[in-house]
Length: 132
Ligand SMILES: [Zn+2]
Image 1: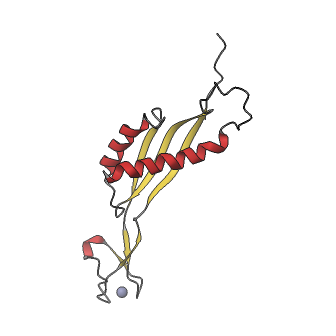
Image 2: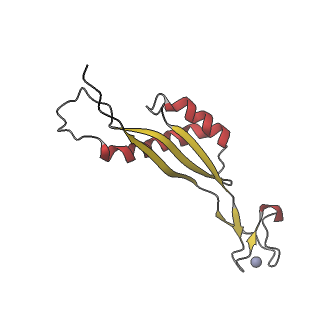
Image 3: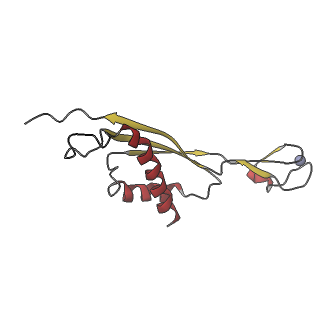
């Protein structure tokens, strides 16, 4: 499934965001290997022309969040409307217009909505584990 590799790449991106917050190799307690930040919420914007099915994406997120260590993270999806524009006269062309500029009768170019964007990651500083 296409969406599975996208979610995998998303978690790679979030991993990279968390990494600077992780203690360095000099950390005296390697047993406390858990990262200090828990990811609470991941916001992703999916362009309508990105070729990504939001439902499949969400399902892939559910399937991979546990194995990737993000089982506490909530996925928030938003969509971005696609926008085409005529390369000659810059007229904006809606999908309903068959993607041809009504004035120039040439194909319009997609200028927005083709991307899958990691918009925001909410991290939470975990409180210290109390000594028992
Ligand atoms: Zn035009």
